[in-house]
Length: 628
Picture (cartoon, rainbow, N blue to C red):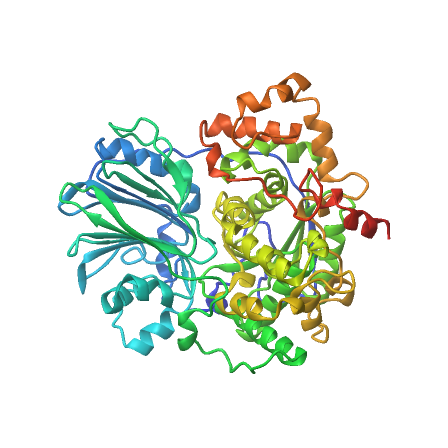
């Protein structure tokens, strides 16, 4: 496994000359300046394989571990591939360092497209991945397989590359597709073509941390892409309006490949439930967990698993950073990450990033954590006008009009833009998934029973790919960054969900009580942060007096008139917006993705309350906490 200790010590853009060693809680404040990068347009030819490297100097690393990328493939296209491939350029932001298109031998109407971040090996780093041992296999994937080295050594596979995804080819050859997906410890979305057995396989990780969309027609034309925007403009003679839909997390699909390049779906299989311990647990090196549900035993096991979840995600050749809102989740991730980086003896300091407006509670809390752990801390300031100006860009990137997702995405979009432009951190850790897993949302205080709270937690985890995971992926990927989310680690999450329901509910008026109690004596983060009440990200970046929620309401009130709301049901029969804010976002979404409202099955809303808005600020418990 490659750890980030090999990262060069040269200063990155906008930083001091000496990058070696950990500093003692230094922090910087930056004013965000609105601006857009010029879009680069590249011409390309119609050769069978076409490769474009933006920075050949990145190929000097002795080891190869891919980071975030964009994948795209067509099977059975009736239209000119040279024209169809233009759609793949819609996801170029996911892999700004290199891209490639490649036809499939013997199938002139089938094509793979790949956009890559972190080019470190021009010969083996690009995709689709093909190796001499399996000339009939073609693999295009986006993700990180954290246990690829362990599986390689255990099964004595002979690798031809140093790409983590090569393990998929070996596992498939050894045990078939079901065995393959169950053995992968990581996050992934893949397209695997087996021309010998005339099969196509699609697969996605348990929580959908890596995105995947597909479009398939009745006559067997199949298109697959990391983001929906890479499919919506494709042409097909028999279907003028392609139905594009997300590929379900925790599933794989088997399709037959016909001689004419078209496909037929054979089966869609759910291979893993978030409650079940994953099969790959048999082959990992986590220290032995103690049995039973005695509280000290549980706390010890949780610390072991969380520490391991962070450690395995150090697999990268690029600089690691961490989003830090000053809340419980991001603070635990940042503190554990910095500890792990020190143990790995990396030669750079951990950069942490917080965003907010003047007097934002998140900025103050994040500063406390950064000073406590000793990170190189960056504060990014923005004002209401800058936030409002990027709403159109944000909704285009997100591919959704969900109200709370859009609200929360503005800050994350702006800070990702800052990170890409002003630092050399590329792999970004974050606390996503904890609220769903550990029952962190404020409305869990109103759960009728521990069993109902458990059901709701699992529902939220199943739908992460529609909301928080979608937000986290698109806002970072829009700027060529790759997100890593340790709270959604398979081992950690399955163990947490195996605990008795009454251990996981809020206690003494405090949500995530078990998680907080687990790290009570660790001194990882300040006590006041460990027990800090839940703060909605979209609200914490502003102030209690003038929240992002209120700023948006005041602005949109003048953008949508009452007559438009009166006819909202006629104009938007699917997920009819009930508020002017919802109407405003829907208009922007329909401008970019007309007729695609069904991508969102329902709005995110709190349960067990009569609230009509998803903001935590509308909930009684939040108001009481704020007054206190």
